Image 1: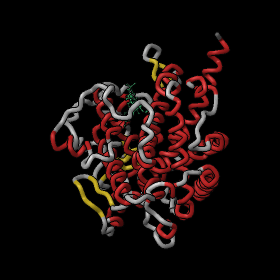
Image 2: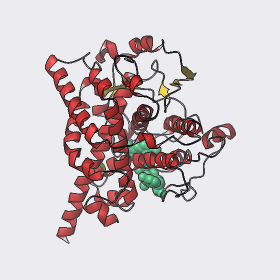
Image 3: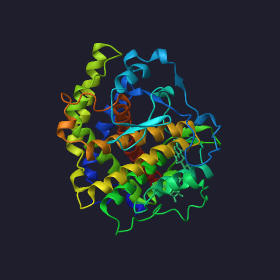
Image 4: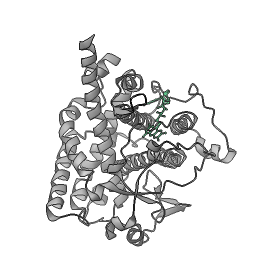
Length: 399
Ligand code: FAD
């Protein structure tokens, strides 16, 4: 099956990978241009909040872990935190927590916009940083353990109360690195796939932009990809799964995204190009975003399960404050926000909510930016898979 992952499409009954593969080149090109534009490349993030669950004292000091920030004066006035918080303070259903908050429908905690730095995402790509070891194991373990739905209390709330330090062996990690038990309900399996797919996408980026420490050169490392992804074909399936989920959310958001104002910076021609690229992304999303959100949260305990699902996913967004490498934390936060926004769109909002004329303030700028950048990251991972397939064929031809 590793062979299959490396040579071509993989078997999956859950998502139409062939459609995704046939559109991904165009999708990737459009997204890649979009995320270089001022609207989509500037993101405000608070990277210096304490880990709320355990005492995290591992910090990656490598220069590859650090990020370059941008002075506020470079950010168009309309997108600055001060202006945004004035607009957002009118919202009445927020639950405030130190440094962050959520609204009832949110699947993740959003940083309080009065703290943090502006980052130019295009200058801080997700790639190999060298962040590894006890800290990463502890964070991934905590994220997967949020899958314990039937626990009356989330494992994290317990941990934070008891101050438990996690053991660093992977052997005991629930569901990690294996098949999802069949008896699990659809929603729990979806949760696992979203997380495992995110993990696999991050690993794909690491292997695609890997630093060969002996030569000092950056480039794709086939062995890294074989070890982390190709030898576990379901991980690649979950990258497709996340891509389809995100595309479906973008398709549902189509009218809202088309009506959004991206024009605080740039020329008229640049604005036209942005809207035209976005329309192409929306066309592809309509064609390939075949995720059926109506199949979830419809049983007897649907609402209870949805609240639990949301709570667990929100906890994952807080675990991101425990990631001991700035660049990894940045992309962890963005992608959890992007996936959380997609889930909100799919599971919480009906057509009326999504109508830009009725609900112009449906999403914050940070949610729109995170959603498009997250889709870009997944599309980029699938693009990288093509590179690894080519390298695999070449290495076989040489033998
Ligand atoms: P890990 O990737 O740490 O995995 C640990 C264990 O989890 C594996 O041994 C395996 O049992 C299981 N596992 C692995 N993948 C999956 C999967 N897809 N599904 C299910 N189980 C799985 N490092 C960087 O270089 N650059 C980054 O940008 C970066 N971003 C990160 C963001 C976050 C949120 C986190 C927590 C870590 C990040 N890291 C990053 C670290 C990176 O993910 C790895 O942890 C690190 O490279 C060490 O890898 P590893 O081989 O020990 O396995």
